[in-house]
Length: 169
View 1 (cartoon, rainbow, N blue to C red):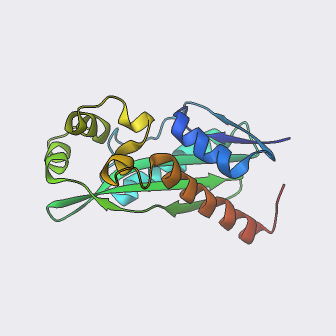
View 2: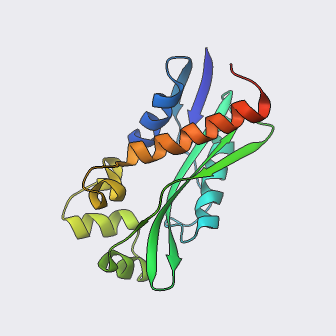
């Protein structure tokens, strides 16, 4: 069976990849360093983190997937952003996800150097939101959760790979 490694042990990210690739692929997560800030603060940095995680994850698999959440400032506003990368060891494909404006109180915390996961937990008075529905789940009243957001990105990645390589394992 072909193997897909996710450059994270976060259950939400692994579940999103498993939804796209199972049952045809074995899917597992591995701790991977993003090589970017703990809180990526631009599309470019967030995408770079996803690419780094994908390359690391692919070392022991047929395909490596990196998923990274970050934020993108636009003037005084701050938007949630998410990026993914897929590599087969020869090239890398990237895709971005939906954006949503973060509440001003969260944006202020981010500008003060607080990580999004901490800011969202403080804002919601919940714990480990990033391991569950994520900021996207909270801010969309459950209409879109973090797994669904990453599932969409992973589907875009896999579709690009199939189209551009002409391969399906």
